[in-house]
Length: 443
Image 1: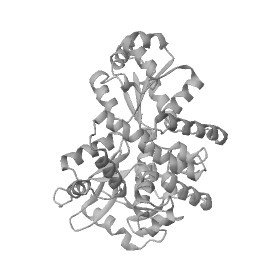
Image 2: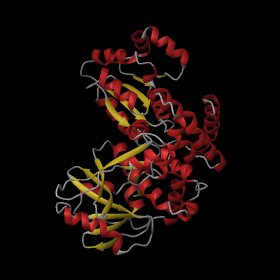
Image 3: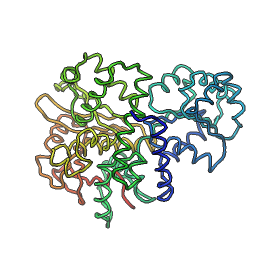
């Protein structure tokens, strides 16, 4: 297992390359600043290596304040001696105070509570940031309930990978469901196709997403899992059977976009079903997968009860699926459709998180096999989405949407998301929408 110092050296080598490439654009920055200026305090959670520290340091550099990282073991010992005294020394009213990885020193949460309470209902400009959500959420519930606004940061989104001024069509479907969809007069399909192919392999983790060195990126994702994911889970959740857990993670990623059969998974991994439940909880706590429950607004319809899992990044899937980090090889192995579905679902979730919009997400499937990949509820609207990786569509591709619309008459339209260039009307109430229009296009 590679040690953390070696991984940090790899990351440092990237930073040298990265500084020559571009300044990383994070849409979360605007939302975070709004929350810091209007809420008592903030918490930024996300997987390891998605850019939380980068974002906080960027804000401090631009606007002033103090950034404290508890990754430093010497600093952790200093804080344990006098958490409140340490924070008072670094805290300046009306200046930002950002505390990275506070869960490594649990004593600091009571000190943060005191500082926030001293400001009353006013903003404190304090933000804590932590990798994963399990530990931080537990501490927030114990010490900071009602004081902290939670934000989630994920890998770079499609919208963040294109030039400034991009517009997502997703909110058009939600806010203007009765309005006709109008695509821009011109779209650079060559650039769109190139970006799609790149993101469907290298995903949105900033280091591999912004580095052109293929072999470096392959080493990065493998070292990422062994250096950051496994050690944290082992430490925090006291995993004893590491081999079983590693088998479980690979199987979960291989089955991304499919229903999880916990009994079969337990037999294959060689553990009990309660252990599988525990493993799933840990993987979600590290924010490496999303889980979808079944949509069941119609109680008369018999629906399957299993959850559906999506990995948060295509790079995790290519690593598990042995595709040689190639979309063409993924197509040959007949797993490209699953990669594409997980990619689109996760990109949609990123749009909501980056804008702070409330939403619920489900999938829909009946016992007789009718299925819709993703159901979004937001702002009183229900949006059913079928995701197809092919550029050529037929009316058969809309069969699940038609069944869903028949069973849910309050929903007027359904949409197929596909990697095409044109808007297509498949049925009077079913439209095929290009993925680039939904995820972000140059207005």
